[in-house]
Image (tube, rainbow, N blue to C red; front, side, top):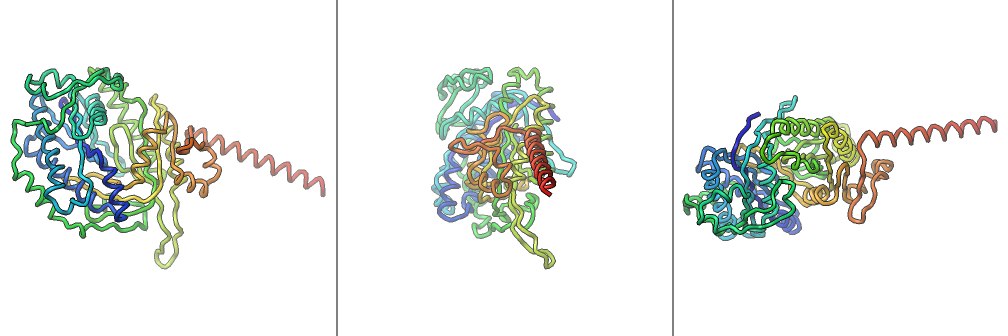
Length: 452
């Protein structure tokens, strides 16, 4: 685990959900969107690495690219401004100059930027799985600023704005916002990306190189095959993908960011705590029928999916359903993180999913795409409170068929179904039901004996 200091920033395709939904509705697939996503983020990664050896790509999480630069504020900001300008121009270039992307909705992007100390550490499981992630106030605040930014805008923290040259400050507008008080902030600064005129020029060659990369892989080369066994992301590439029916499970630690001190005085403590929390959620996932997809800050994305009926050596293997295992895993995670004085909210949806692996670093990042992923994200973000699991009607219907007693623990909110319960409490309900059944059977048998 390494303690670093620098700028964290996030480049996000803000309308990528709509891009996916539109293509999936029109074609039943997400081939164009996947191809474009890989080209867009790989091109940004390649461009940034040519600018500076201090430019680091952390990961891709859906439609968001996590980046950081280990340097002082001003030189780091100059790289951020140049990369952000390139990303903005690249989004426009996709629409006008790359023919295979012209059927897609045009990309809109935004950028969030913050400076501070953070930890970079590598999570490694006993099975050999490895994933790098960062922890710290700067990473969390940059993600928040990205979420607050309007389309085609960049937002920076006050600490960055204060040290900028006067000409650069003029590009930004101050925004007061009460929602960032938990970061001990009350304002940030935002600017249209089109106003960024970086000191490092972006040449036409940079953009034509993107077209060459896009043309290396034909759309027809991308294949979405089905599954006959639990998904293994290690076997996937940007051309060898999977189409499956399953449940994405988002588990997010509630109000965790506010536990990080702005001056990073408790960073050591929080880094250790975060690692323990992520390990707890990962362990539950992998031990109870789930597939870990990736960590997203203090949030985990995992997958539970159906395996259709199939034959092995002439023997029929029945279909395996995922509803009960996904819900029970969520309950187990609620309990698993409580020893660390935190609470999680969990969101789930069921439906068609597209799984792949993309990224300039040897296709490193696990990616799930499709409307089902979008809805699971919404369930977690908007409807699940502390120690709650929010599921869509699709999950509830499948769960009721697989285990009606477990389904009864969910209450219809009018929009989704919510259970406020950990696994230990659920097992007490199961035990009580079993005792009641045994008592009923004993009474019945006793009465039958008396009649005899």
